Amino acid sequence: MAPAAEGGATTQTPETVDVIVVGTGMMGLYALYCLREREMSTIAFEAGDGVGGTWYWNRYPGARCDMESVQYSYNFSKEVRDEWNWTHRYATQPEILSYLNHVADRFDLRRDIRFETRVTSAVFDEKTHLWTLETDRGDVARARYCIMATGSLSTPFRPDFPGIEDYQGEWYHGGTWPHHEVDLAGKRVGVIGTGSTGIQLTTEIAPVVKHLTVFQRTANYSTPARNRPLREGELDEFKANHAEWFREATYSHTGITSNPPSTNRSAHDDTPEERQLLFEDRWGIGGQPQIILAIYNDINTDQEANDMVADFVRQKIREIVDDPDVAELLCPDKGQPIGSKRPPIDSGYFEMFNLDNVSLVDVRSAPIERITPTGLCTTDDEYELDVIIFATGFDALTGAMLAIDIRGRDGVVLKDIWAEGPQTNLGIMAAGLPNMFMIHGPGSTSVKVNMFIGGEHQIDWIMECIEHLDANGFVCIETTEEAQADWTAHVQEVANESLQPVADSWYVGANIPGKPRVYMPYFGGFERYWKHCDEIVADGYRGFRLSRSDSSETNPSVAAE
Ligand code: NA7
Image (cartoon, rainbow, N blue to C red; front, side, top):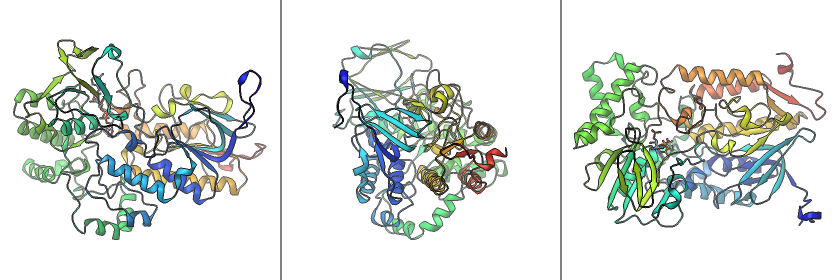
């Protein structure tokens, strides 16, 4: 224990390691594994009392992944693949959390992890080229490199409705669901929000609650998950053909393969009758959103093509929901292209509105004003509720990084440089923050690509980069402002070629009051992204400044710019 200085402050010498990893979700764990393989010293800080990140926190009833379990898995270890057997086409949260725990145990990763410890600040020292991180438990640790595996959807957002402190019922947020059993049976439950969380959760709890009131601000295009146990042989076949699958996924836009795949033609190439047949067929197959959203190759870019699919989903909603007024409310507006908000998949969501104990309240026309001691008030009515569940989403992609006081070279403060929206190079580094790497950062493929494939690729890139620096006597890598500006502009350009930025989604930060409206993920596709990353390396880390300890030498490719 370090001696206490006069006045009670400690003069503790911070422990110094090669790399600090922040967060031990899917990618924090993989980063730890890679560092262990390279015999680099490391500490990981984790806010939860267990590993798993998103899958640790989001333990609300019905939580499930909307990507096929076999594809939503690590690729780096054949052993893990061989020994782990997914049970369903789409895995539940507990199953995914068990998988991540299994990986942590298998590679003995826990011994480097400090649980229940949240990083509060990270400050770069230009003289020593070390980052100093502090935590809410008083840890002070230094490292040559930081890997910020802080998650894309890890900062829960709860609207600031007045009155919550006087509410006498129970309230929960999907993203911080308690570990203990929550008994909703026989209760009047209100769920605010109809994103993926709200859709999964309401469908699961509707049969047990006394009454469920769904407070909807924006209707959502949800399509059937048609989840089922994996068929005999299906898993073995996937494992046996993993290499081919991996190649196909790597050369794809999303890092995901779909069966059936896209027709690879325009929606305009088919007659209305042909389209209808195809839509009906895909609706019957169901599954991950691509099954329907990628039927044609212009759904994401051509408003008319998009309308064709959107109209079909609206037609389905009207067929399923008995009450025509409720059906109309559940139909998304024409101005919201399908796929421009994250598309949910469901297991009977629209059917749920035919139950007698379920009602839908439109809080777009009459917004929620306040929480009362016994429920909540909208501008035109009052609702008595025993339980309120906030399924109101997350401060996506930038929230977790901005929650840490990050200060880089020349006193650069991340909050200031991202005040008008995030700026990064490749979504991996931000100017002014040398040796700090982000996983799934804004400007990377992140949430638009299979997050295992995309994240593993980024970590492999970072490992190669650190090896390159160490092997060549460099102590620092930092993106140049110019390269960052170019990449950030490219991210916007690519998004603007599509319908992605049209809706008020968390992709553009529209769900968080006051957040700058900027399309944050990279929508150029995985193949284009990793090829670009490779080219940068092949060009001697083009756009990055590499320096030695006396700052005498910089990357020749930067000097030549
Ligand atoms: P989402 O998709 O951001 O959904 C949040 C929902 O909460 C959405 O329907 C919002 O309506 C609603 N919301 C937010 N604030 C309010 C207020 N003030 N009043 C009423 N309704 C509100 O979060 P999820 O947790 O469902 O899903 C996040 C991702 O996790 C998901 O996309 C998958 O990638 C997995 P809005 O649409 O903004 O009008």
